Every structure is written in C-alpha cells, then in structure tokens.
Length: 277
Image (cartoon, rainbow, N blue to C red; front, side, top):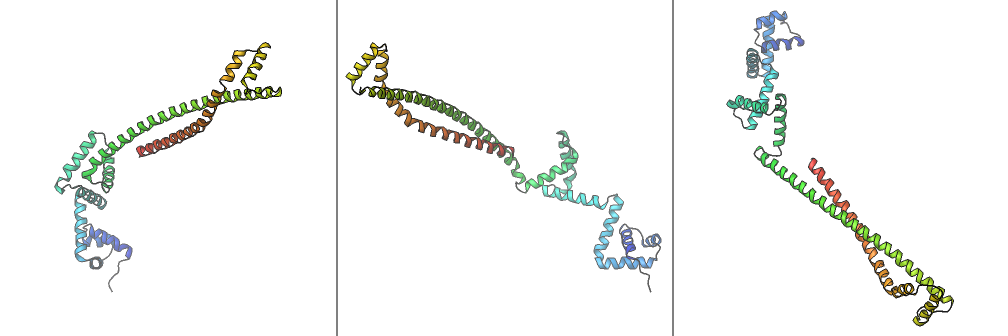
C-alpha cells in the first residue's frame, strides 16, 4: 500500500515543486519517498489541470530566478494595467514613468504620493474624461470668478439696501417726531376751545375769538403768537393727516427692505458654500 503524505505536508511539497526544486530533493527534505512525492504532485496537477499547473511552476521558477516575489509581480501587473488604461504602450512604460517622476520631482511632488495621485486622477476620469479635464478646470475657474463677481454685486446691493433702511428709519423717526408735535398742538387747541367754551366763547366765530384775544392782550398775552398758532391750525391738521397716511407705508417699506437684506445675506452665504466646495 503506497504511503500517503499528510495534508499539512502536501502544501509544503507543492510549494517546493512550484519553486523548481527537484522531486528527489523534495523527498529528501521532507523524509518521504520520491514515489510519494511524484504521486502527490501528479494528483495536484490533475486536479488543477496539467497545463495550468505547469504554467504556474514555470512562472514561479522564472520569478525566483529574477528575484521577484509574487506580491511584487502583482504590483507590477497593476501598474501595467494602469499604464494601459492611460494609453501608454508597453515599450514606453519605463520612459513614461521616468518622465512623470522627473516632472513631479521638479515641482516638489513626493515620489511616494505619485501613485496615490494617479489613482485619484483615474477615479476623477470616470466622471470627466482625460481629454476634457483641462476644459473642466477652466470652466470651474470661470464659474468661481463669476461667483466672486456676483458676491461683490450682492455686497453692493446690501450696502444700498442698508442705506435705504437707514434713510427710511430717519424719515420714519422724523414723521413720528412731527406727529408728536402736531398732536401736542391739536391737544392745545382742543383744550383752548374747551376752556373758551366754559365761558360761552365759540372759537369758530372769528369776531368773538378776536375780541377774546384782544381781551387776552389786555391781560398781558402775546397777540401775534396766538394769532399765528390759530392761523396755521388748518395747515397743521393737513400735515398731521398726511403724516398719518405716510407712516404705515414707510413702516411697510422699512420691513420689506429688511427682508430683502436678509434674503441677500442668505444668497451670499450660499455662494460662500459653493466657493468653498
């Protein structure tokens, strides 16, 4: 009955065979017969496929001769695939990599980051083809410039709106101040009318009112001042009514300007976010 090699040893036997070690040497290294080694290798080759197994042994032997590990071979294959995707011919790989390295070195780009940047560039090329990257960058720079110009315009508009708000506030405050003065004048007039009414003197009757003023002068009051106040009374009432009409409109305009200012500030914030991206 032929000797069966343990499973743990089979892997070691196959590894040594793939590395090009002769069967007799493998048998001597593992303390088993050459026939057992032959049977193990034959069974593995048949299970994998004779041609495939022989190709793997040839590849492993070649890598061993040139001093390249399988991991290094895999890295080289990935690099070759990247070069192919970039459109670099196989005969130009060395000159291409040398040229890229020298150019990167001239601009201070660290060698260990070149592969990372190439990977990023390949990822970016999935959304923007290589032939369009230059135009894409130029378009983004143009968009950035437009956004900055738009921001300057918005800042100017905000400045104008703030000035309009300030002017509206000043106008509103002046209107409120004049309203207080007019109200005080009307109050004084009504109080005077009520006071004269106590004595049966109708203020609407000018002759009687003049006689009353004359009597007031005799008691030491300034006739000119009293006359001016009452002669301007009708104009004062009209001014008062005008202010009453204009004040709500001015307050609405003031609130609208404040809302526009808030909207423009939000627009500037949005442009800042776009620029940062």
